[in-house]
Length: 224
Ligand SMILES: [Zn+2]
Ligand SMILES: [Zn+2]
Image 1 (spheres, rainbow, N blue to C red):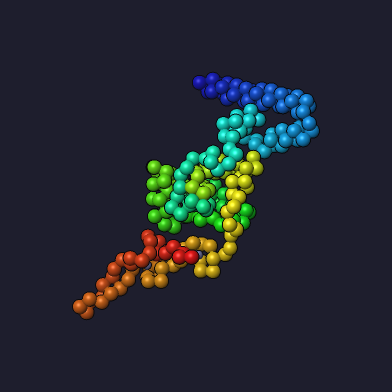
Image 2 (spheres, rainbow, N blue to C red):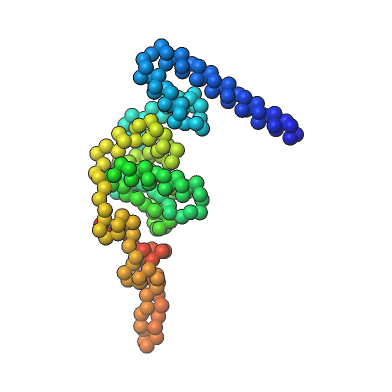
């Protein structure tokens, strides 16, 4: 049984290597026929993606020939008609999700544009909002530009590799630091100081009540 599994494992490797070799040969041949610029392009494509073969990357390109925003599915988060909305999480629960969110945020930061970041771990309302747009349970990261759903980590990084992300972000205003929250988008509730409890006096007794101003984490959304 074990040797059979081993055989399949090696068989897969050999097939992959063979396929890779064929695609490289075809590409080098084609590049030779066309200009030097194209040759460089083909080679750079091979380097970009070591997880997938050139063939796979090409098929992906054909499958997703995105040129403009109208090629993307219309899904508009509240207030996202003319802006970038990015659903993210700062919970480290699932390593991959956390890393994906951090990497996209880092990528978006590089464009120095205004991003409406909605951290689902900071506010349940954001999570419900995302599920509502999605029509079911889904986890971040999810990126929306001007009311169109762009994708999760894989799609966003593919678009960046293809040099298409910058074009999709055209016309988005540049970012500036919020003086109230430092772009954290949340402030500690001033009613309860983040404790989620408020005290009231009733007929000489001190009552402890739930604060109605803030969310489950004792935070309020930055009004700016
Ligand atoms: Zn703010
Ligand atoms: Zn509060």
